[in-house]
Image 1: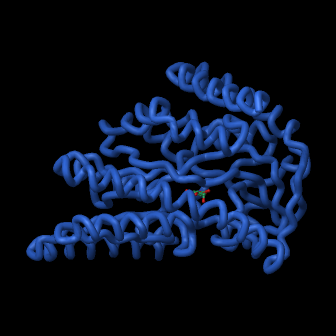
Image 2: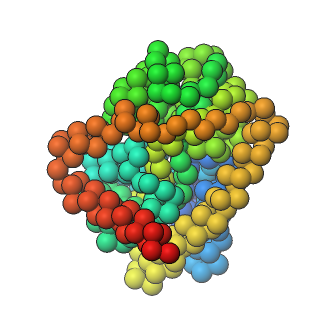
Length: 340
Ligand code: GCU
């Protein structure tokens, strides 16, 4: 881990040197950081962004994508994006809540009733725009959201079939107060850590399991160690692409237009790749990694953590109107289906 941090720091220092050199050629380096592998939909989306920006503004900007936590884990890279050492980073909504608590809303377990509900809410500008712009004062702005599927438990020694199976188990969670509280309510023992540390922690029995979408099993290889994946469906937590505020506000209106188009391209390309990737991932997990998939009854899991909704609304009342709007979108969708 230390090595990674060092490498990250070195990359930035070297990058900084490069920027000053490159200014002479008139090119500014745009650093984009994320924590996924090269085959992950997020990287594919970002490569399409790079191509688009360089096709349109290539005489001025050189976009460089750094995957695999090369520049650091998400918490670090959000900080580096605030200062401007990095221009853009992909951060899970989970960790953004410690930078601006309005992001707590999308970390609520069982907030969305289906992927369709999730997509409809995240695509609803009236709901997300005020949230996405809320961190300008902290030095960054959210420019796009990316699908990160549904989060489920996966474990090393035995499958999770009921919430009681979590008792006494150490489960890795993202570094977020909401997720720690959620694990407490589920009855497991929350072990927060960065994404890049999870594989080794599973392998060395520092943790008994983790929770994530299917790609963590294959693309991040957690399935080499954890063989039981249970669809208890507790969260759909989006990934958020954030950009340094100073960089974005210094763009000319014409450039900003190109970048905005670029952000849309990341979303579209990432989402197109997502569905296929999940299917491939499940197949690969089953056939090449011997991972077993389980479909436990979801309701008992839901009942454990639903009190979190009320808790969060009480402690953070500005979320109430957003929460209600999200419920409304959900109802209008079921309504639509019933009428079909
Ligand atoms: C998913 C998500 C990442 C996140 C990771 C995690 O892979 O896409 O943004 O960092 O989960 O659990 O930390």
